[in-house]
Amino acid sequence: MTNLTIKNIPENLYQKLKQSAKLNRRSMNSEVLVCLEQVLLQSEPDGTSILPKIRKLRARSNRHLLTDEEILKIKNEGR
Image (cartoon, rainbow, N blue to C red; front, side, top):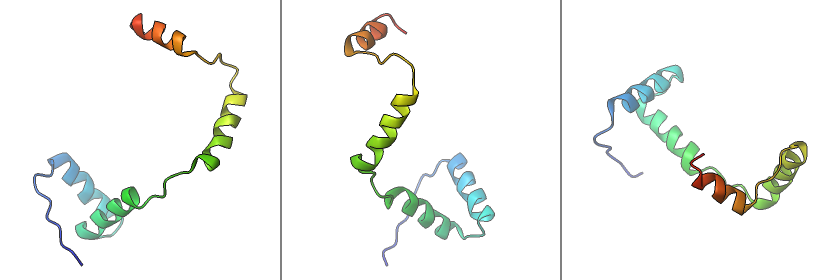
């Protein structure tokens, strides 16, 4: 296995990691590995699984869908 040294960890991040390790009854090293795995080994969602959910949400929404021109106008107005 490869080793990694992390330097200059912000104190607040270190404390959160330490607290999380304690709550999960893990060593700091194990907690870091779990955090890295959760972020880096997540499977990328594919469009075919997300698209039906988006369509369902859109169908439930009675709101007007903005056009590109409307979005640009709103941005230019500073809203």
